[in-house]
Length: 212
Image: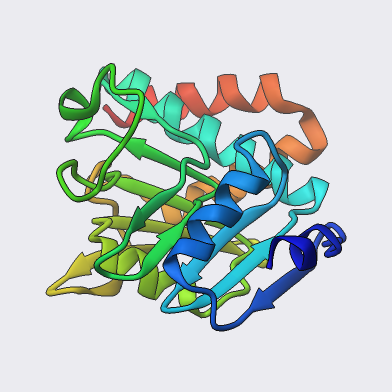
């Protein structure tokens, strides 16, 4: 398996699916890939997906993540961003690396921890996925119990809230109630591509303050 994996080159924007991957093989592959890499993984009941993002994907991820951080800072809410940390649960036979994720309501529980163990620790309060192409991803987040999943695809932001074990599309966020983020974030993101990051971040912070 590892020899075959080393022969696989995943071009940016493409993904590779490996079938019948045991949990032990999954763990071994994670160790072989290492933590410092561009590729993202998703594991669901024996199916392993390896995806390498495009530069535009990464720019969008960083900008939307900056919007989330600005919201939390302006609202004076403590948080812990954990990027593409690998979240996995052997009993559920699932694992995922989000584009970014945030501990917000449960920040104090994981504060200072070097490792997150979902058998004892809560999942992140908010996960972010850009240009989602795999249908398994929402299922994995649902199974791991992530309360809120943001999916940004084709210029649109979709907020999914976990209700009775399943995601339901919502106009508002659990963490940023009453703010029209589904409309506003794509607008500011579009502006950032023309005006530059700093100008748009300042404008976004001003908009947040006006809402308070």
